[in-house]
Length: 304
Image (tube, rainbow, N blue to C red; front, side, top):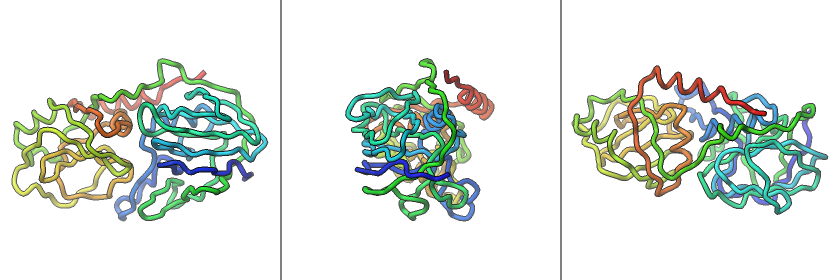
């Protein structure tokens, strides 16, 4: 049953409904979207007893101010440290808590990382478009969040409070190493460039939901630097003609014509997605087999 859940007092800076994304339509030119940090997103849902793909509110840098309209609700906040407040008083992340009618939630800003996730027991009642509740702002696909909106939820039975084991709570340092599967366009780079890519520390110059531009020692691209337009995965690393890597993220275009030197594995994408401008990133070579193993391990987390 749908019921009024929150009223949006202030939207915040980068606030949107997101789930795992609009899968299966990239070949038709539809952007995937979805969460930037799938680990934090899934843990928030698990803490309130939702299925792990239930839509959450993704909050970037500065979150919204929300007032509870329902009699009560169970929520959890995971991801970047966005310094959550309940009626002006700090409350813990990575833990489910109950809130009461009239309570005000606020998220004044991140001190570590960029993106955090607000999950509510039962999930948000949001229209699905092409099988996803994710919002893509450039094409206005999905449901946007505005000041003054009433957000609706879906009622579920009550659920016990849970918290994530401390050993499973990630940190968000401003220097990260991420593992990369090389290819598929290695032949478009000199041997020196391939070695340089895996030994250079890059700086995040710009970042948003579409991608992260990196700064550092340029790579040498063989020939014109163009390829036939090719599908781009989440975490794909393109190298345009200026030789500076560009990592494609959740709101990436569906195809691109720059050679791809590698792809960040799923278990590590969140590390780069959470890096602010000025953050440092290094790339480490890995294999497809290791990527599958690491992703499987990341899903076997415990809540208590």
